[in-house]
Amino acid sequence: MTESTAKITAETIRAMKGQAPVAALTVYDYAMAKLVDRCDVPLMLVGDSLGMVVLGFPDTTGVTMEDMLHHTRAAARAEPKALLAVDLPAGSYETPDSAVANARRLVDAGAEAVKAEGGLVIDEQVRAIVGAGIPFLGHLGMLPQQVKREGGYKIKGRQSDEAAALRGDANALVDAGAFAIVLELVEPAVSAELTAALPVPTIGIGSGPNCDGQILVTTDLWATSPDYIPKHVQPNEAVRTEMERAIMDWKEGMSN
Ligand code: KIV
Image (tube, rainbow, N blue to C red):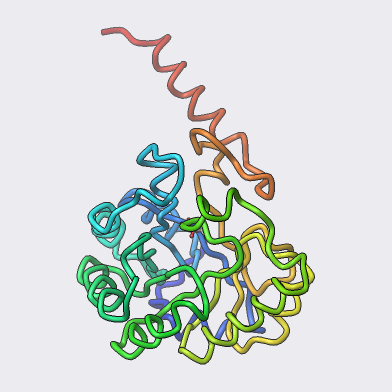
């Protein structure tokens, strides 16, 4: 842990390209945001993964704007040095107008940037969000909000048409003004190629080591995600074990 106090902005993250690795973690409430911020992680995401690891949904598709607003307010109360980005949930950015209106609601709740899934198909929405002065974080590759349509969490970019689509999507996001792009479950050779080609940081999750940064669902790192931990994560089992031991020790030593 360091004593750094400077506020991180979307520009800070963009400028880290080629200078320093971008570490990013999800946070879902005040306590998590305080803890992660003490570790000087420059980018925090109130991810819609909260649907699975906090709210008990089977995937992220049932997460609502109200859910995201509630957890954004909680995380924002920590007033982190980190940039606090927040997911626009499924169905909240179908049109440029709804994308901007919902992005503004998240900003009013404390978001400093918003993320949405997709490339060319949301080009107008991204342009509208950036045009409204709201920093935008892209998300390409496996798109969890499309998991039902895609039939599972599958690696993207293995086929040449998929790799070509990823290139087109990434360039569209950069042209629309994204300050960084999350690459989820992208074939490592393709994520390495995108990282070398793009002027903004790529932030990988299950996309190999050659991205400009990495993001994880924090409860996967802690091995406390209740139902499932993806294969690409090496969880720190000691965290969950210690939490369970603390509870057992307390239970056994209870005097009243
Ligand atoms: O919702 C989420 O947690 C994400 C991941 C990329 C970390 O979008």
